[in-house]
Amino acid sequence: MSDDASSLAIMLFSEILTADQLLRSRLSRVLPKGMEISHFSVLNHLAGQSGEKTPAQLAKSFHLTRGAMTNTLGKLEWAGYVHIRPDWDDARRKMVAISPAGRAARDAALLGMGPVIAEIVEDMGSEKLRAILPTIRDLRLKLEQD
Image: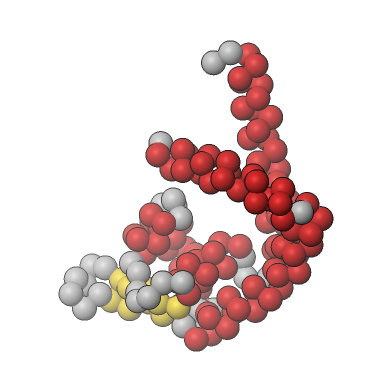
């Protein structure tokens, strides 16, 4: 990789990581008490799915280790946001579903996040964001291949 390409890559990833950190900080402040971004992400994923998922399926979806997902699911179960039960066909596995309380918590989080996201879109302009979305998506897809 040339020095110019290396410098460009460093600047790009520095901007992405800083933007991620700033966005997570803003969103964390408006989440319901005790909820973390990772909790919201799992609840949002489960709310959009029909049926149950295994912890391994969730870990794969979020590119996490099974241990990290088990930790997050334990916190969500303790809060009453998910139901975890044994798989009736294979006692070694568990099945996870969002609870009514989890759906309500996810909805409350979305209500809190809405104004933050709307402000960002308004400040930057939807056309500008629409233009960069394909590039960001392509970058994500490339990173998922590795």
